[in-house]
Each structure stands twice: as structure tokens, then as C-alpha cells.
Image 1 (cartoon, rainbow, N blue to C red):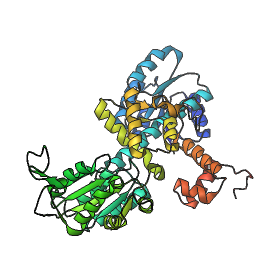
Image 2: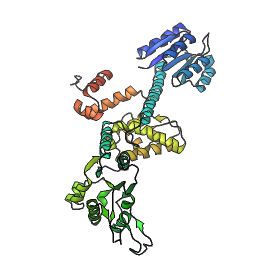
Image 3: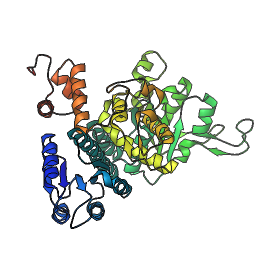
Image 4: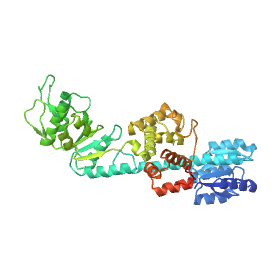
Length: 453
């Protein structure tokens, strides 16, 4: 729960503000002077402080400096009379969040407390994301703490220790090359070459030359001997991306390589022994390709000793905030910016989006927003136009909402979309039934018949 301190030597104003904030649901402590407040602040810092500038024993500006030294992200709201507005403005320049003028209205007190709360929650969330992003993942380069990704990490760790061929079934933008590289880096071949080749969009002659190499004089223009990618990867790993695009005639030759563990350079007369691992990837349904006669069944079984299916981003939505923070950090470095986060409205739009381009599309969206934003955090106005047109949850006006309110609205939306089916909602939200039921009670989310059954 958010903790608030009210520091004011005027008893009536202090008690009135404390009563209003307590009624609004905050945990509030009041202080008549700066010294007792600072002693308490040093023991257990407050999240928000309503601070009167005119205090007898210690000035408000001095107290503000102490607060920021103790905990820099504590939000300080200056409370002052009409005659000291200039001082209040100066205090905001020195780190105060906002200021109120006496006499303070209940509505203004609650409104500014909510704004301060949003700032605190945003800071805490950013700290959590930084901590998670800073943790050393099992798989280098991957960002994700969802159950789906933890399962992938565990599979990669196991497969890396076994010298077998691997087939990755994954859509574009889900991290095929990262996965292949991780298997290589975690295995016994990590000190040997990792070679990448995309099988799509090339003629048979070019694929053959690139993979197998050629002898000098093998064809017109072959002025020297060329070592192919398969041979150059000796002792290491060859990653064949888009294997489903490989011409049928080349599939026969690749099958021979996998069976005999040797190649013949184009124009060569002596076979070259290979000691490599093959990792292949496809975004096609190879079983369907086999039925249609465009992919060899025997090659399929040679390649998929182990099959790893990488989840789409829409299947691990809980990783989206962490990925966003990671991509904001990358954009800050690339564009020399200092973007601190993303607004609740913009985050909600991204959380509800299906991402046909997966993680790669999300990174592109964040780069777009980071390049265009004029503030220190990304808002709905910075996202591509398709997001501004969606209007998925809050309407067209940017709102700054507390994290609990965001969670309440999102849970209510999921329940509504699933017809208040708790089993379906649990599956989407990735929480236990007990946790969901506790949140429903906590937020007072009503079912259509008010029974909750």
C-alpha cells in the first residue's frame, strides 16, 4: 500500500488532509514538524509527502533536499499559501512533484495524490523490469520470464548437451537465430564456428556453391578454389534458416550430406569429411509440405531428431512489458535519448495487440515511438497510427491510471470477453484460479448476475 506523510505545523490543515487521504484508501502519517518527520523518513521512507513550506524549525526547501537524499523517487507535493507560490514553483524546480495552495480542496488533494501514486508505481515497475532485465538468463540474448519461455530455455539447455540435429518450428520474428546460437554456445561446439545460411530466394546453383564450395575452374568465373559454408563450419554448427524453401533437388544433396557426413565440392573429385551439427528452421508446416510433395519425408526425419517450437509473442504476453523496457533501453542508447518508460494507455494497447511480426515487430514499434516522442516516456501518440485508431480500452484521451486500476480494468475485460468463464480467464491471465478469485473480490468486479458463479 502507498504510504503518505503530511508535514504541516497547522493542526487543522494537517488533520483535515490526513483524514481525506485516509478515507481515499492511503496509509497516512502526520507530522507537526520537519525533524520528527525526517527521523521517521530515515527509518522507513514514505512514497508521497505533502510538505508545508512554512515550518518554524526547518524550512521546507531544506526538508525537500533531505527527502531526495534519503529516497530520490519519493514524490513531494508542496503545500503553501497564495503568498508563497513563487517559492512553491522554485521547489518544483528542485525536485518537488507538484504544489497545492491553501485552502486545499478535497478533490485537488485526492487528484494530486493519485498522480503522485502513478509516478511511484511507474518507478517501482521500471525498477522491477530493470532488475529482471539485469538477471542473467539461461539463454543469452533472450528476454522473457513467462512459463512458455522458461520451458524453451530448459529444452535448449538439454538439447545443447546432445550432439543431434534440431528442427526449429517458428514464425518470423520469434528468435530462431537466437535459439540456434544458444544451442551452439551452450554445447561442446561453442569454440568452433557457427555458420548461418538462409535457404530461401536462391537458385540451386547458388545454394550448391555456397554450401559445398567449388574447385578452381569448376565453371566459368571460378578463378580459385572456394571453401563452402558446410566445410568452413568444421567442428561447429550450421544453421539452415527457411529450410522449407530449399529446392527439391538440393534437398536430395543435403540428405546425402546428413547420411554420409561428407561433401563433394563442385568440380571436385575427392570427398571432404564433415564434423558438423545441423540446426534447421522453418515457418512452414513441413508435414503439410510432405503431403503436397514439396519436401522430402526422409530429410524431415533426419532434421527433426529434436523439434523445438518457439511461441508467438501473443502466446507469452506477460513478457511484453519486460521486452518493451529492454527495447526502450536499446533505443535510448541508439538515439541518445533518456526515455524512462511507457504510459499505461500505450502499454494497454500493446498488451492487447496480436503482433503478427512477433518480437521483431514489437522492437520496430518501440524504435518508432522512441524516435518520435517529445517526452520522457512513450505515450499512445508516439505509437504507429494503427494503435491510435484501436481505442481498445480507455477511449481517445490519454489517462494516467494507477497500476491496480489498470489490473482491475484488464481483468474485467478478460472476464467479459470470456463470458465470465473463470477457467478460460485463468488460462488467458496465466494465474491460478485462487489468485483470480482473490483479485475479483479485491476489486469488487461484479458478474452479470452478481453471484460470481
